[in-house]
Amino acid sequence: MKILAVTSCPTGIAHTYMAAEALQIAAKELGVDIKVETRGSVGAENEITNEDIKGAHAVILAVDTKVDEERFSGLPIVKASVKDAIKDAKGLIQRAMAMEKKEYVDKVFEAKKESKEKITGAYKHLMTGVSYMIPFVVAGGILIALSFMFGIKAFEEKGTLAAALMDIGGGGAFSLMVPILAGFIAFSIADRPGLVPGMVGGVLAGKLGAGFLGGIIAGFAAGYVVAWLKKVIKLPKTMEGLMPVLILPLLSTLIVGLGMIYIIGGPVAAINNAMANWLKNMSGGSAITLGIILGLMMAFDMGGPVNKAAYTFAVSTLAAGQPSMIMAAVMAAGMTPPLGVALATLIAKDKFTEEEREAGKAAFFLGISFITEGAIPFAAADPFRIIPSIMVGSAVTAALSMAFKCTLAVPHGGIFVLPIPNAVGGLFLYTIAIIIGTLVTGFMISALKPKR
Image (tube, rainbow, N blue to C red; front, side):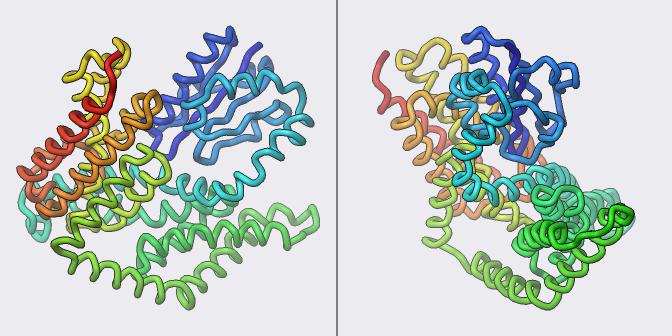
């Protein structure tokens, strides 16, 4: 029996490959032949071919973003999240093995997931947009940081390398952040016809001052407008070719554009301004409280919906040339969990298996790279001790980062962006915050875990 699988997470960095590895290990234990296609940040790897599909029994789609399902038409499909695959890969494979025909899938499995889809659908659309947006944000943010190497105001002098880097990073990559987010939210809902109104809505959100929140609203509006137009507009077969190239892009862009200009833009811009003023005036206890909340969110599910909500909020506070305290707190809090568990495997070796101690080495490198998912294997094995420990450590780190008023001009990169001049405001204290949070996590895990 041969099973096919596709794994894809919003960032395309850790969960994608962890889910693939879990499925491969489980398949080996069950004696099942499996081929797993990973759709990560570098694109599709180990791609499934038509020959693979012809000889397959069923397909597992462990995805949190939109993927092409049409190519698997006629095969039974098990749909799950990447986290489901990491936690219960064997169960997914057994479910796929039990399926015999398409009708069985439609009647039994789809019925089970109907209520769940209502809850997760909007999140999946949002995460599809975020997954396409993140490379633009990271590339733009690091280019902006490189511009700062020549001085915070160096980019203002036209014709200089600093100005060129700022134009590429801020005027280029960063300016596409909201249109890409909006466009691919709409794409997730309505396929390719959603891209035009979604991206145009995202551009208008930027022009109107509605920003990140306006882009999200524009993306969902565009997607559902296109889906509605597809249902209500019925053309003769001879004119159906006009739908994707003329009627859908024209009408949907007109509706979304007018909605952004006359209905959505103004109120959302007012909300953005109020939030910006609140963040600007925040100091002392309120800043520390926000740091604690963000730290807890980053560690709670280590790359899941709560973590991504905190990260997405932090990215929205970044602007070209404007470093963010919130971004600094979030990145520090995201680095602490894997660093903390790595430390625990060193100082309390007798409380971890040999495999866990080896995983601790990998967690260290994931931690310094700001890949919070490095702590997941430890949390899955001992959630009631590990998760509270990493949440406390991340909360301490983020609170200290906010208390020290550290800032960050880039949205990702871990320690590799720290040496870039002016990328981090308050570099020494920022490093101290990360170290303290790591120590808190490591010693708390060591205290709570029993000896083996």
